[in-house]
Length: 180
Image 1 (tube, helix red, strand yellow):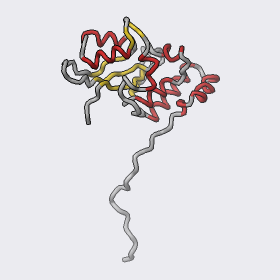
Image 2: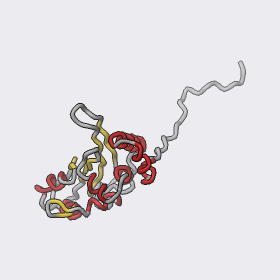
Image 3: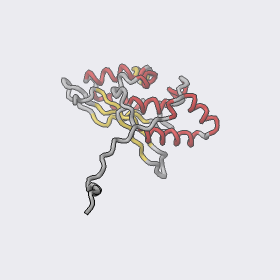
Image 4: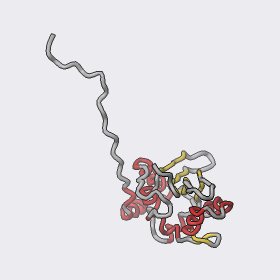
């Protein structure tokens, strides 16, 4: 018998995988890529990069996320998104919350309607190819807005394309997120 060490039956401990950088955060890179890539292919490449890098979780409250500043200023149904979000946080006019948010391509995935309590709302912003908010960012010249939004949001959800629809991409934000 020798004094050689036998391999351990334990699995080696692995460090958590580092977050992959999203090259589309660089607007110049995005513009160069768009010069030689068709619209649908460019969208697919950006969504893949977003999926690989995941949500940045830098500003998960939809009322304060820097990437959504342009969107919060837009007026639909007579109110800005910022005002709508404020009213939701206050708990007033709860019957209007769903139509308000849908005007911006935002789904309410979960919300507390009880008046004296926090909303604890989970909001999904549609970032798909033909989403409602694309024109807001395009008109302002923010070509890589999806990647910027992904940096702020709490979670990214990517649904595979079906025969009837293309890929669906959502950025999940909170309003009055529950305390941890």
